[in-house]
Image (cartoon, rainbow over all chains, first blue to last red; front, side, top):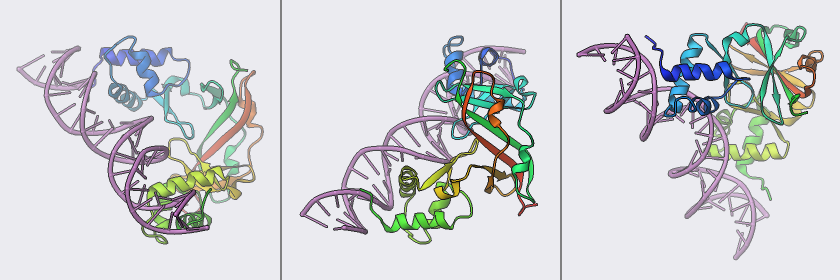
Length: 124
Length: 124
DNA sequence: ATTCGTGCAAAGACTTTGCATAAAT
DNA sequence: ATTTATGCAAAGTCTTTGCACGAAT
């Protein structure tokens, strides 16, 4: 069974305190302030465990390695905005009308992803 | 300057004949039927050159390595549909109403991506 | 004492690059 | 003959995995 360790707690705290989805290296950098000796493999392994437990959700943007965020931030249907200036990824709530209507006849749409790019309020 | 070689022509033909965006390994497999000795590095290099020339366009879907397609197929604004059964990626024409409206106040949206997932007409 | 987790280093997938050779001019 | 492209292998990034050691029970 899975055990509750110092590293695991540190990583969980990093995600809880984060202001947006984080990549493994960012998680490591922050977790090391708590648990200096922690390694990147542990971060990857812990992320995988937390994904299996539905404690974490993967945020995949086109052309970039995955980021992760606490699953509770993902309960309502939403999408992402990436600032092309500072690189930060924000959640945006809600959705557009009927994106499935884009598909041709005979295609069944089960889900969709929308990613917005531009300049965030902080950078503007 | 850039030269027109046997390999280059073979790769260009592969893209011209393709029924959808292709990844580097798929391009290699098809090009090898024309030019047996061709290597993967040449495919990557040629793709990069063709991107610089705006002869090719990158299709990036969340969580997957890039695929590429001839740029002329990308002239009108469009998005992609990925079949979760056969894995094939299709273009879908058109767009939804005002996707920028999802962004919060103070965020400026310059572009967006939409990806649909489901089952294609061939698989249904 | 036993079990499970960790760090490290090695390996795997994908992509880029250095270099000697080959092809195109 | 000169220039640029190619193939191969080495290296680079991101992620996973094997293994001996360490921590938790």
